[in-house]
Amino acid sequence: MSDEAVKQAEVETAESTSEAPAEEPAQPEDVHYQAVEKEGSVTAIWEMQGQKHLRTIDPRSAEGKQILALFETAG
Image (tube, rainbow, N blue to C red; front, side, top):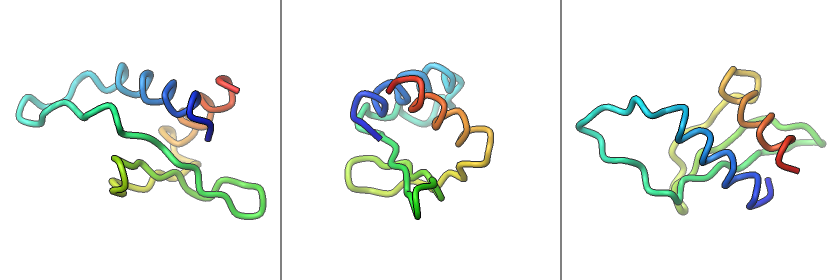
């Protein structure tokens, strides 16, 4: 994903997840997403914080489709 698309996805994801629990501090802005591709298709989306892998998102899930849609509209 391009840096511009990643930043756009971060902003819109942060806006949609404003219901974070009070005990958990706000995530730093260095959370980003990386698309894992195999033979031209996205097989996974990695949520990363710096060099640390936080979780893997299925691109077929609702959240995965939203992230991919943000990437496609930002390009």
